[in-house]
Amino acid sequence: MDAMLNKTRKQMDAAIEHLKRELARIRTGRASTSLLDDLMVDYYGTPTPVAQVATLSVPEPRLITINPWEGKMVAAIERAIMISDLGLTPSNDGKMIRLPIPPLTEERRKEFVKQAHKVGEEARVSIRNARRDAVDAFKRMQKDGDIAEDDSKRSQEQVQKLTDDYGRHVDEILKRKDHEIMEI
Image (cartoon, rainbow, N blue to C red; front, side, top):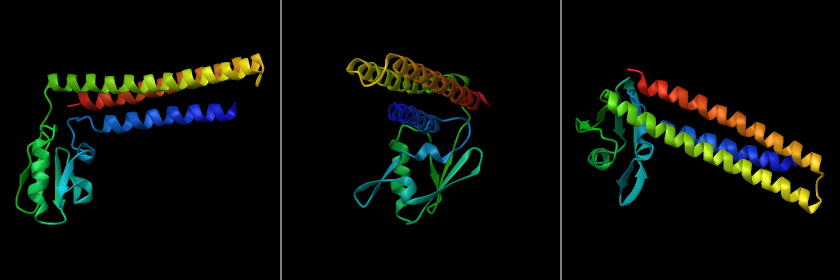
């Protein structure tokens, strides 16, 4: 039973980590290098994450600088940014790329909040799926005679408590992200 509870907790932790990663990719009015996590650059014919071919930094709240390790990568990085769905326009001086982050309109902020809530709902679904799997496993163990009915009920209650705790954690994370997006 403890092994099943630990497995369920790990699945729920994974859902929370995935939620955090996905929310980091949603743009706010503030610059963050996590916006470029999925940006792939053509590096000698191989798609490579931009962080592996350049130094990323945030010198100002609304600016990301990309300093390629090789001078000829400037054009490739700039091209990758232009064809991405980031909606940002890079400028370069031949050695470094500056990526200004424009302030978000109210309408755009609301779109990002909706996107964040969609990601949050996906995390909740993952958490509920982990709960369902654990409850089904406990019922199956009880049916097979591996555990008593009282133990099965107690374990199911523990799983429900875990589900409730993780659901509240998702709500807290979303509330912080909403505040961050709506902040001007």
